[in-house]
Structure formats: structure tokens, C-alpha cells
Image 1 (tube, rainbow, N blue to C red):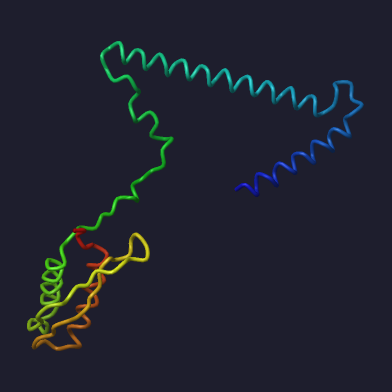
Image 2 (cartoon, helix red, strand yellow):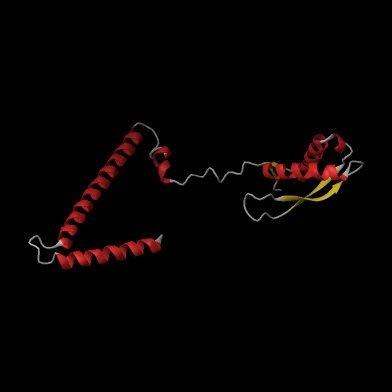
Length: 171
């Protein structure tokens, strides 16, 4: 962004120098003098607008204080100035490792009739690489009497889904 500002500033300076050289002997004093007058008028307009806004802000605040309300304006007034933070909240639910192991085992057993003999999994905490990455992984699987191939397929889909929905509870 800074690079674009510098490029734009240098182009404006170059164009103003060219205009100044071309209109130097003009009766009105040249293009630079006219532009400076317009910039001065725009600045005075902006300053008067800012002062008007500050005055209405002070009046609103004093009116609220005299009515027994809060001494500062409501937070909704400045909502547009703040960055939205809806993406900061982690929507995943928290579970302990033991609860998560039971939930995974039940989900795998329900996935297929061939997985009814499945025993359990062992969940291991891990450090995520980014904020939305899962903070746990499967360390081991106890297949029991269930078919390994069927359990592997069901387990992979269940784990992918649960890693998006569940995070480990911080102790």
C-alpha cells in the first residue's frame, strides 16, 4: 500500500510540475496556484465538518448525561469503525480426550453393521499449525472383532468430520 502511495505521489508531483511550467505565464497565476486555492478550500470545508461533528457528539453526550444515562455514546455508533470479529470465535465444541474417544467409537459402530465389534480409539493431543487445524489426532485403534478394512474406511470419515467439529478441552 505504501508503495502505491509513493508511486501516486510521484506522478502527482510530475504532473503538477508539467502544469506549472506550461501555465507559468498565465494571468491567473498558473495551475499550481489555482490547485492550492482549491485544496485550501477543501481543507477548510473538511475542518468545519469535523468541528460540527465534534460539537454534535458533545451535545449528545451531555444530553445523555443530564438525563441520567451513560456519559458515553452507545457502542453501536462506532460499530462501523471497528473491524468485524465474527471469525475470531471458535465454533467447535470442547471435549475431554476420554469423551472424544467414546464419541468416535460410537460413531464408527453406527457407521456400518460390520463395525459392531469395534472396541475403541486412543486420542492424542497435538499442536495445530494454524488456528483452525485440529488439536488432536488418533494415536491408536483397537479393532476388536470388527473387519479392519471396513473400520478404517468408517474411522477416516468419522475422524475428518469430528476434527472439524470438536477440539480438546484445555485443562
